[in-house]
Image (cartoon, rainbow, N blue to C red; front, side, top):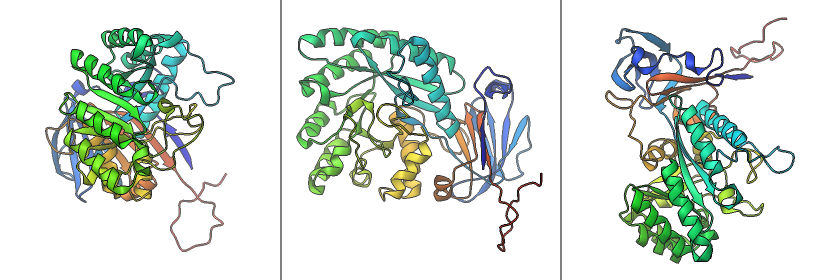
Length: 417
């Protein structure tokens, strides 16, 4: 089986060859929807203009044949570390030059885009000897990706309490002024976790930023206090990966889930395992947060990819459909509910508009070869990604079998050479 992806922007034959949203309508023809209908979908101005039965929408511009594809709302990546991605194979410490961080961030975001994630949220460490250098490089990558994918930067300070915290607070405010749109961090690593959260909420309130914090979530009392502190904060609070909740007695975890739901705190789980944000010194968490229990309590649960070939994990695909597949395979969600965690729930957690394959909704779509969600989560090889009404990435796969296979099936055969 061979697999190809669209080249990087700016290269000959790259994704930039596709028409921009204002260049005319695009019709997606013969696509299958999750409810079983086969439809044509006309896009224009970055939105879905019309959905009709197959063959009913005459192309007024370009057309894409989606026969054999399932058309879905595009997923989003709610928890990435693009600045440290793709460093696992480095000889020695990974380069922290602005150029290399920007290159890694761009490559990681394009990898996620090729899998279907038209928007992502990347957590970026600030402070220490590096200061704001990594954040500046990520913001440069965000500008370079404009029109291909939406990338939000989360400022992640190291320490915010005590004598060392004053510098961290000042740098956090500078990060927001530079362009970080989300306040993050890891209270578990601060000497005063409650004080850390208070500082984050103070800065977020000053600037009207959402909050997205790393926590293992193993302490139910701490999670309860956190929920009480964050309740009602707008534009929203997310925590993750909260794998520690899976190690709690079920009754305790259920009580915590109710507290998080009452405070409208979203949970971003990482089915692949923890990320560099928690610094587990090489130990791995084998099970994600209890997604089924959290959803039953009314908590919004999004699923992210987390580590992408970095110090936390030497492998990783940056693929939202893999995150959904893992949740379904672990029994934490049906395939349909698992896909919701990487699409509608992920988009809501990122503060993005809802997407449905209906007229009037944003044209953020993913077409995957297959008939049903369970099938595409299992064998999601060929994909077509639509962002703001234009095709921005294509991945295709071809499988052939040698002619010595003697079974009563119509198998694709390798060409004779």
